[in-house]
Amino acid sequence: MPDIIVKSLAELDNAAKEIIKSIGNRKVVAFYGKMGAGKTTLITAICNNLGVVDTISSPSFSLVNEYNTDSGNSIFHFDFYRINKIEEAFDFGYEEYFFSGDLCLIEWPELIESILPKNIATITITEKDDQSRLINVD
Figure (cartoon, rainbow, N blue to C red):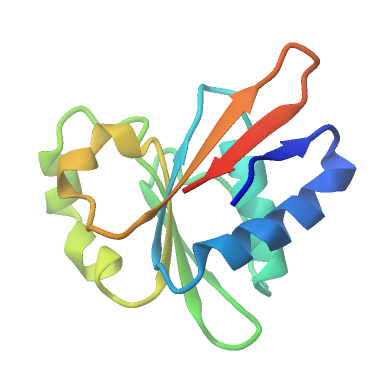
């Protein structure tokens, strides 16, 4: 998929739709980007487009939030920014989530890369000098 440029929040909804198409049937999606790049904002737009009926927020302190969609599916949103060692992911049973068949959206995946499943989608968000965002989906 070609890179997506998002120049304003008004363009985010269309970007989320394109990303959802690009993800295809992959169930684990890793979001890379610096602090403030817009990972949580993009995840919110993706979840809204997938019919999430719950309030979407960063799971900074809980590590994982579960959202329900209007069709009864679960989406899991992870934020690994605050983990100190990979064993913390083992402690809360990451395998049950990553291999559940439900969509898993992961912020700060670089902190747990050694336990990520194969065949994940990766999304990299880069902030440009003009404050726009370059989004690469692989």
